[in-house]
Length: 222
Image: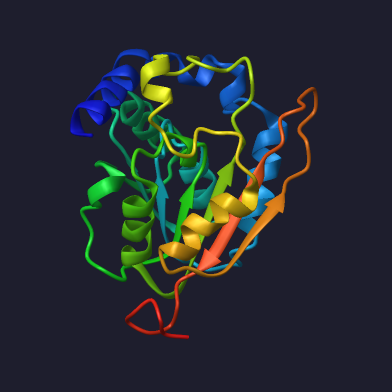
């Protein structure tokens, strides 16, 4: 599995400079910015300690910082993190931007109020292990927000070679409840899958998966 992640990481280090210029990534889309502004508004006024997993070039991290939250963004691509840091500096926003893998988060347990992940779920090599990490770093009653778009025909091999994409468990035409089940297995409570409004000129259906960390120490606590 380590070799698989290494190939994926090298891909983004090599091609990450082009990320913002690809329309499907939505970093320059006013409609996508409005969508995520509404999603993040659900968090309330805060300020909250938020971990943006797979922050990339900082799309979500910047929105969170503009809302006065304390933001930490992680990614494994140095190429993309350079761009995120540059954007934060240009905007005059304080964001902790760290190179790290979501499989082994470099944080103590129960240190974040919220974990957010945009365009990340489909890339996870070991969803059960990774979602357990997200659960671990959340404070009791902390919240997770992650989007998911079922795999569509015509996108095979778009980001990674086919032999890699076939090994990604959530890179499938999955029902949202099937994805939500992964979160429930990790311990999250009140897991919901909400259908997001279609973006202009797009037929891609996207869901928002959300849930809460239970209040006790173990998965069985209410």
